[in-house]
Image (cartoon, rainbow, N blue to C red):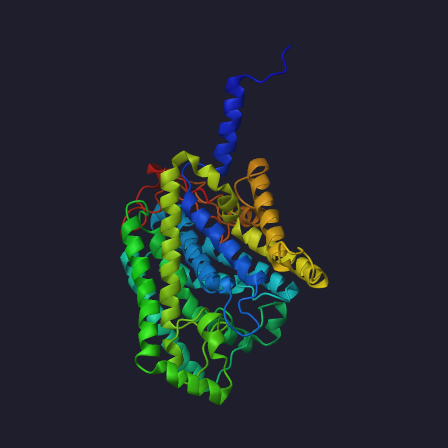
Amino acid sequence: MSSHRSPTSATAGIETVRDRLSPAGRLIGLDAARGIALFAMMVTHIFALSDPEGFPTWAAVFAGRASALFAVLAGCSLVLSTRSRMAASGRLRDAVPSVLIRAGAIIVIGLCLGSVSSMLAVILVNYGVMFAIAMLFLRLRARTLFIIALGWMVLSPVLSMLIRSQFGLEPQYSSMSWFDFATPLTMLQDLVLTGYYPILQWLSYILLGMAVAKIDIRRHLMSLFATGFGLFLVGKGVSWLLLNIAGGGDELVRVSELYGTDLNAALFTGSYGVTPTTSWWWLAIAGPHSGTPFDLLATAGTALLTIVTCQSLALLLGRRTWVLAPLTAPGSMPLSVYSAHVVLLEITRPWVEANPMLGGEAMTPQAVEFGLHALVFIGFALMWKLAIGSHGPLEAGVAAVIRSASPVQGPGASADSGAASGTGPASGPGAGPTSGTGPDEGPAKNSASRPPDTY
């Protein structure tokens, strides 16, 4: 008896691998964009953002932009993972249990990571709270969400400056953990106003992502590209004019010298969430993690440009999108990959610091550390998708809780049975690369007319 496999069997095996790496009906472009966000954040976590003289390094290019992209994509996931529940009846209350379970799970995971991490500002607690708040906007149309998001980017930093300057609130740079419940008022202040990722400003990214998910990305690639490019130009361009033409730069130099603020860091490597309150001119900068109108606009623009680029590439590749698997596999399970990265960094960083000659002349120790993280998570994600399932372990766990506690009723009952956390995978309903029910449309009236969501 021959032990050779038939050509038909071999072809079927290849198709199975391709289908698992690039499942039909999934927004592969969003998975790729989220993979880029994950690895770009790893760059900012591992490589120095400034040199000994205080000037930005190449890694500073990703500062602020990676986390903004991740937040915008999280807003997309919030809409896509609740679409079937909303479509079944059009009632917000049908989506409330799944959103709150998802938000609660993210908060718990974030608090656990914050309790063990000594190196990173874990963003998950902020995400969980923002998802619970953003749930109130789920029924809004795309155009309305775009307008609200842009208005939020412009006005929320002004409101933050007013409140912080009025009450003398100083930034508290600590990662949220279970220990923060000992000081609940301080914890709330950090979450909303003075922490690494203040919800007051960062909610604008979530709202923008929700707007993107409510349109047909395939039909509106050029519009999204123009919007992203415009936001980037306004954010960077107006900031440059205010600092270099209107005199804001000279005033900030004076204020920085007076109060001992590192202006170079604020402009190029990061303000760690919020600007100082020593001058209103601080709102004119567009530095990473400064939370100013121009930072929010510029980074939102780069997020949209990245999404458009990735989705365009996915369209060009068609069913050959499996070649993007090194990005899309980790990008389909970001909660698992991000959480594991936080833990792994606690192991690799002491090892790297104890071996300053690691990598020899060919590579720096930081490059070795980044390479290790990249290889581990690409390999893990690929093997998991091929051998176990399309959702990562944490995403699948959250989805199981949601299915158990809040089953979907009516047509499309398995709609978000694969729903990951709000930071979870960016797959879309229906065939092809469509991400919404159409431009400026509300929830679909008949969920039975399309395939269930695959989150």
